[in-house]
Image 1 (cartoon, one colour):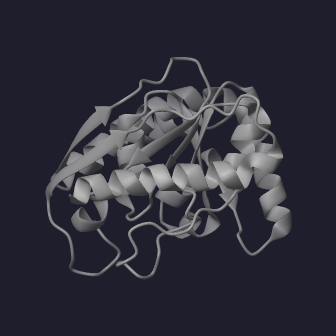
Image 2 (tube, helix red, strand yellow):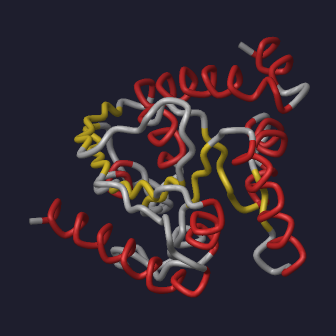
Amino acid sequence: MLPFLLISILSEKGYPYFFKMARIWAKFILFGMGFYYTVKREQKLIKGKSYMIVANHTSMTDIMLMLALIKNPFVFVGKKELVKIPLFGFFYKRTCILVDRSSSRSKNEVFKRAQSRLNQGLSICIFPEGGVPDDESILLDEFKDGAFRLAIDHQIPIVPIVFPDNKERFSYTFMSGSPGKMRARILPFIETKGLTIDHRKELRDQVRDIIYKGLIDFQN
């Protein structure tokens, strides 16, 4: 796939083609590692519509599972440290929106690039915890505001997704995990029409509470 991937990233117009190949790559990675996934969709995305996609973040496989589940082309917003991964980092740098969380200037650039992508009709995917918590006993870390500010600015629906098994399947602890099932649940969307930037913290807490309750449901 490498020659076609390289061609698809020559310009931003080629991103939808890159996205289709990335979805194929993600499924090969998941199945090749012995994972199979099931998904319960409580609401379906409409083709051609932009969304803000958010989920809990516990594993590197969250990226692959997200690509496998969502057909609408979306762009990840992620930490720039992943650029260091050989080959993956090359495409990551050219197709995702990178953020340096220690730089306020970088955060402002993220909003500009995200707005540009949304104006192109794409969706945005953000893991609002801002990274995987070092303490694996934490079920769901606190959310940051960025995803909800963007969703309100563009008046697009938020798509909350729950990944209950990825930490167990493939965590950041060495020699942990196992092949097996990865479940996912796409929860009912949350509309942002009529909301203003003053509602972002209230919206953030609402979405976090919904995802947290979804995780608890799976544990029970």
